[in-house]
Amino acid sequence: MKNECSIVRDLLPLYAEGMLSEDSAAFVKEHLDTCEECRALSAGEEPSAPTDADTEQRTGEAGVLRTLKKKLRKQTWCAIAITAAVVLLVTLMLRLNPIDYLADVSNTKGYTFSDRMALLFKGGISDRIEAQRVLHGGVPMAFLYSEKEACEMYKIAEEDVFSFYGALRYYFVREEHAGETLTTYHIDLLSAHFGSKSGKMWVKYWYDRYDKSDDLRWYEGSGAPEGRIALWKLEKNDDGYWRVVEVVNNVTLDLGEYTGNTSWYAY
Image 1 (cartoon, helix red, strand yellow):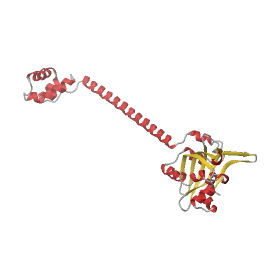
Image 2: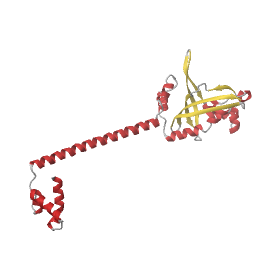
Image 3: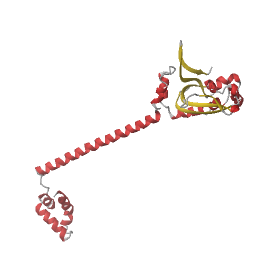
Image 4: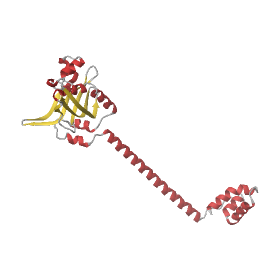
């Protein structure tokens, strides 16, 4: 009935002008004979006041609409919360290292709480870019050559090797194997955090060295096929270059009276 009223009220102006077809005019007239409200509108009168039944129906419809709106709002907020949780989770996964790394260094006494947090959080993009510059600087020379060979290649005086290579000098090929060593190595950057003058890099690396004069006989390596984790502490030189001043290895020594880590220092 309500739908029929709407149709008739749309047709009333045309009905009054006599512009409807016979069938449409008959339909409108038949409806006006039975609907007091539409008849009043056709005569230019105000429609009669809504009955209690009409009021009850409209109230019910309004209640249904309010319920639907509440449900839609709830669903919208749930969708927003789920989306935010997913974004947060993905962000954390991208910025955090696996907790296994913390477990790997848990027994080493040489790491502070700050060191361990630096391992857990990978660091920002700018930090990781700076770390890549370090890794592509003097690091390959330290793994591939002896100290003397590296000094000759870079034209560095032997007394300056400490300030140039810092603690990386401990990775050099031993002098007795200089020129006779084939080294394979790999370094993964786990995290990087740099300030204005100091920084920290966590790396995971492995290397193996073979004697070229003895049919590539293996003679030295990191001793851990899965790789070793180490913390590199850095300082920025006056010329703006970062230098590794300390390497804190993931090893704890227990030698009776002495218990500590195996740190390598620049000096």
